[in-house]
Length: 199
Image (cartoon, rainbow, N blue to C red; front, top):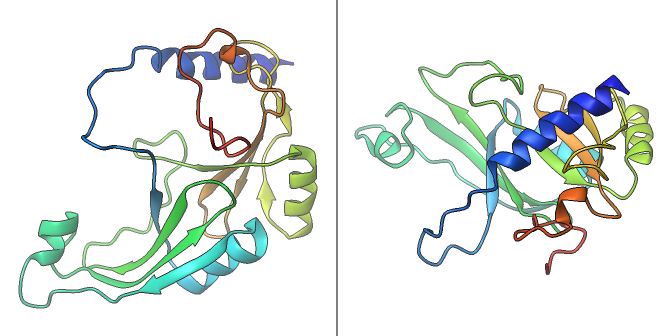
């Protein structure tokens, strides 16, 4: 129960911070197209996302480098001698795309952030049944965390969550809210969801 309360408090603070939306916008902005992730091993990453998560590979391209100039720094804010060995884009169900990068760079760091680190992140996948997702992931040898955790109080009540990890440490989440979440009642803005992508 204490986990459900903590999750509800966390979700309440998250949704509360989203309340004051600005009318300003990037001209023509239509939505989230993709999330880019740098991975240590492209083959391993593609196999994980396609053979475990269930995404589909759409395309690969690269390499990109600039031996003599500062193109990589100017375009991407990375070391001028950085090399993108390969980019692979994948599509996951009805959600937005994921773009996988395999980089090498003189100043490359090998540190996977925790969710609590500044710059930390995770990717969440909507599933129909979080318990079934956990059983499936564990049968595939994937490390899962506490859960399924149903959120029963606060604005996020109605969702169930489970965190899990890719083999190289990337944080991921399975989430489900088949009856919606409590905040939706009377909300001016409803979060986009792959369970009903037209809303």
